[in-house]
Amino acid sequence: MCGIIGTIGNDPVVPYLLEGLSRLEYRGYDSAGIAVIATANAELLRVRRAGKVKDLRTSVASRDLSATIGIGHTRWATHGAPTEANAHPHFDCHESIAIIHNGIIENYLALREELLSEGHAFQSETDTEILAHLIEKYFEGDLLSAVSKAVQRAEGAFALAVLCRHTPDRIVTARRGSPLVIGQSDAATYVASDIPALLGKAESVMFLADDELAELTQHTVRIVDFEGHDVQRTPHRVQADQVSIQKSGYKHFMLKEIHEQDRSVGETIREKTHGGTLDHAILSVPLAPYDHIYLISCGTAYHASLAAEYLWEQSLNVPIQAMIASEFRMRNPHLSERSLVIAVSQSGETIDTLMALRRAKESGAQVVALVNNEQSTIDREADGSVYTRAGIEIGVAATKTFTAQIAALGLLGLHLGQDTLPAHELDEELNRLDLLPGRVTECLQQEAAIRAIAEKIHHASDVLFLARGDLYPIALEGALKLKEISYIHAEGYPAGEMKHGPIALIDEATPVVFLLSKDVAFEKVLSNMEEVKARNGKVLAVTDAPEDPAITRLADHILPVPHVGGISRPILFTIPLQLLAYHTAVWRGTDVDQPRNLAKTVTVE
Ligand code: AGP
Image (cartoon, rainbow, N blue to C red; front, side):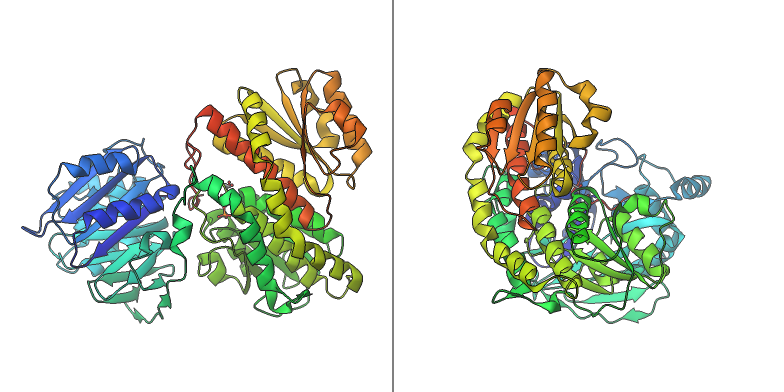
């Protein structure tokens, strides 16, 4: 949540800050701002705006901001409304210090009282401004030392960057809980919440760990811990490709990412298989014996985990449970050194998943990360990792990372089940996976028909998604996608549950999307379809049995998917639902890539 960016070099800094903020806008987009130290007189200059980075760009255009050092922020509001006064950067009393922050300072009220009693005056309702005044309080000429003292008073999560007009050749950053990456090139040093902001600029990157600070000058990076000890960190080459951060002719990133799924699923599978066999190096570490498995995750990643629970139950002889990460910590899961805990996360930074992972580690469990973002915090803190190879995902609604997660989890399941799964079943599964990218393309070719259906349903105020077995998690995901980007209320339910409550919602204005496979409780789901029709509901059948006479009789619309089992089935049924959500949102005119109130990476609890 919130994107932060900073740089120090020789070139004018403002164009880079604005471009970097646009690339980080998926992290939060209700207000934005920049601060620079003017080259002419070392004054701190600041421009902030409620609204998006494009609005900030307009305000910046009319200002003279000649500078080669600066910081910028795009906000997802927590404390205080998304107004200009609450937008970052925040200043201290003397406008000597500017700070940008991602995270929450939980003890900000107590600190605010202390600072007020010492005569500090506040201009915003944010928790962040407290830090500017704390740094002011501790500043005696050494910015690094002042920031260190200030952040050690703070409870909660932060990734921050600080400028001070009295030390105009440096930026100080610090981190606990929220992500921060430092980049370097021959000409400049950069700091950002995430790698996309550094692409095309930094040649190498390194990640700050929790409870570390860094002092950046044009050519140097010094990392220290909170005790002031120097920390050595090896930089990595920048790996992500620039194509991922461009729309390449598509109207939205989400549509581009939906269309990339033949490749993202294909890459994820190819990396873990060789010549039709499973590569058991899929997991970077050997596992100690375990007698149960928890999958922990949030949102879309939870739906992928639930899909894995259904798939793995077929072949693994241990209890498996997918749990929402924030609830995992509210409960008393039985954890020991015989627990295998798998944290599934696209970003690898989701705070609820990270906290659940830490809880599992404290209890002695073995922890495996399944992430798209290598070198993310969850990746680094886990005992071993499996990667999805989806490339950078910019659309706030997860699409290609979801199907890549199911593919990677499916293959991880084959690896975990290597002693129990009959060889012919493994071969069959691998053969199917070989053909999966082509089948994904087949599903994508339904787009025109889906767009027409979306036009018909886009005025609905409620939509139900019903399915059974391994398609139930996909019903949940279809409903989540629709509500996230179109703002239509949608619910996913096991079809068998409909008669226990949701049936009360059915009328002629309620579209019901059925996911229906010949191989998954076909007759029973057909009966549920009859029940919906009997109440005048509108039925959309997404099915691998499109010719079945009962379906052609009952459904108002039919979307065919290829008839395939195993790991491929939940992936293939996902594609039409993503396209349905996308086109419904487009018909409604919502902001598809940056839906209201959401952020791509949720780093607050
Ligand atoms: C997906 O469309 C959502 N925006 C959201 O549910 C997301 O999947 C969730 O926040 C988990 O994120 P992660 O995969 O980065 O951990």
